[in-house]
Structures are given as C-alpha cells and as structure tokens.
Length: 117
Image (cartoon, rainbow, N blue to C red):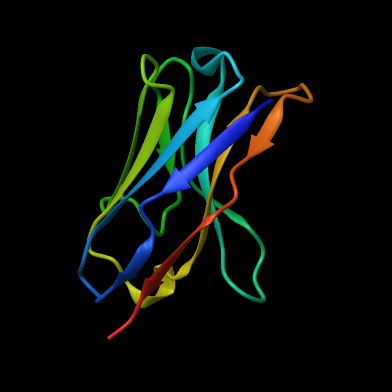
C-alpha cells in the first residue's frame, strides 16, 4: 500500500521557520518526482516546490529564496525547509509523488502550517 506520511507542520510567527518531512512507503521512491503543494481555504491547490528524480528543483515564485526542497532516496524522504515565513504561507501542505504521464500519482494527508502574530 502506498503511503506518504507528512510531519513538521505547526504554528509560527512571521519570519519564523519550519521544516516539513514526507516519508514514502510502498513506492520505488527514487523513480518518482516529488513535490510539495499547498492549499488555503477558498483557494486552489498550488505547487510550491518540486524535485525530480535527477535532483533538479523548481519553486513557485512566491517562495523562491525562502523555501528549499530536498530528498534522500536512501530514506525515501523529501523535506521542505521553509524560512522567513509570511502569513500568506498559511495553508495545508501536501506531499506528492508523481511519474509524469502515468497514473502513478499519490498524495499525503496534509499538514497544517499557520503563520500569524
């Protein structure tokens, strides 16, 4: 059974940091592109950061310079380091594993990130 287990969410003040983790099981992790998405109430889910199976990363413009995505295939884990958090970063963050052009697409349960004073 495929499972993506997320952790690391919480509440922080503006300017603070959080590190999200996603541990995958039931998939051949190194064969997947991994990504973090987020969704705030009333808004569409958006791509935050992604790292492909070659280690190439890309980021939403709104988080460039603040967030860093990384992966360790030996641990089947992907992280999202979030620094200089802003209130507009408040959302539920979801881990995603995907192989483009296939039905191999999986989601984590989501972890809440709240940035407020």
